[in-house]
Image (tube, rainbow, N blue to C red; front, top):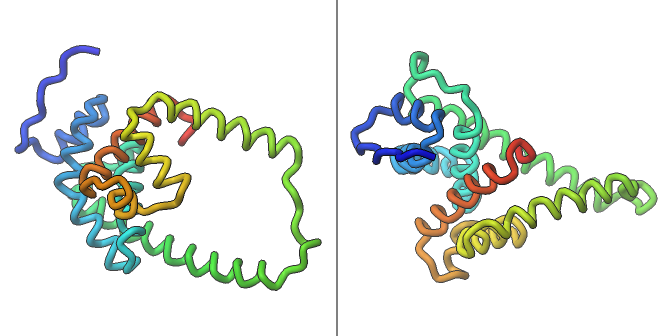
Length: 191
């Protein structure tokens, strides 16, 4: 890969998006620095839970990076990210409510109503787990540790920061960089 000049702090949003789409991942970090607070604030206002708001903030930026739907000619980036965040937060609230209803129903169900995964499904899950585990070994120790605690142990980024005695910003950076690298390693398998 050739030399990529440092992106200036005063680069416009539209130019940052163009640079991101051309493969300059530094642009994602700059967009995150610019709009991460806004996205988190909207997510927190809807969800009212800090750990869920943190996770949704990461999810919004990861989705923004993977999808090329933003058109700077149609809306400001802050508006686009705000609408995406609000929509996803509301979906999470509805999902939370739906999961609670499902949990209530499952507690009342008899064991005969559940079906075990087929051998083919079990093999597919095992293969997917192995692929992701293999990809995780290619991350830095910090990135892997943060992602494993976050996704496999179910800890929020705040809890990960406490457990590893790291600043929350450092944990977020390791998570973001780890997810970017996993995306490169796994390609479309994560899509």
